[in-house]
Image 1 (cartoon, helix red, strand yellow):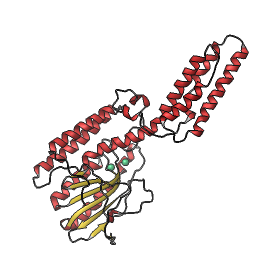
Image 2 (cartoon, protein in one colour):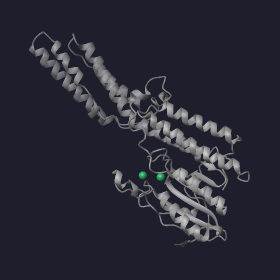
Image 3 (tube, rainbow, N blue to C red):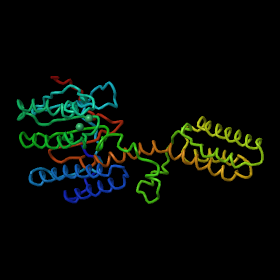
Image 4 (spheres, helix red, strand yellow):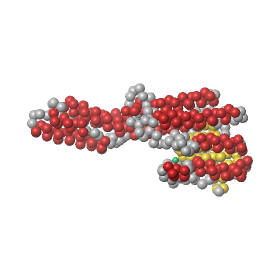
Length: 368
Ligand SMILES: [Zn+2]
Ligand SMILES: [Zn+2]
């Protein structure tokens, strides 16, 4: 197992302040409605980090807090498992004894008994289920164990209401206890960064939240992303009031109404041959058609302008789900990053997609 990139040589305190700064910036630029929520993330992460640092600095025999510039690493072959659904949270542990013997846990899934307050006490995350199993085993064999390997599909959670301790803090605390008591080094692998609260964290982000050029997220607005324009969301109500302004006869009014309706229908059909378009292509597609339209002289200019604005608004709106997907992955990765790497008693790595498992002997394990 060799890190892909050299460690950046920075003192623990320097690293700590860099990550704190990063988290503050992240909290600031993510214009979420709930700024208190962001404040809590920063506090949670920084207090966990502070705990981490404290313990490391008191123990001079523990190697310093170091983070590989690249913290991706394939997991050992013995953590391999066959999930029913590859995108569903699950976790598995392998305890490795000093004599080389290995004990593998069952594949465990989180237990969520509905969300009503009275039932949340039955909630158990997969990591917690493993912690309990591991503690039981260590009571018996602790001194004989060399390593604990854990795979969890999502990185351990960082935020979990007021009643529960998040899994990352629990992991740091448990791993530290196991190290102090038995000299065990815990190694954790995950596939997807869960971030503070999972993949829905930015779901309420609106185009207007990021479209001001002063927003730190503005560069994402014009990302080269492909998306589908859902013309069902096209809002055209504001073009029909122009009909009332036509005063030269009923026929002219009727003509304009029909013309507006047919233009609207045509715009709605544009989705049929725009699959996989970039934003610029979607815009051009609609605006070019709008430019080819001619309406009654009195309202022509304003109708064209209204149509164009509606189309631009639609394209911006539809680009958001793709932008949110990118931003969520950036955000969740950045929030999890301070925890990655080797801190002596605990190592946490993200499994790179494509090379999930490292090469090794495929030996059968003694299952319990
Ligand atoms: Zn949960
Ligand atoms: Zn958790």
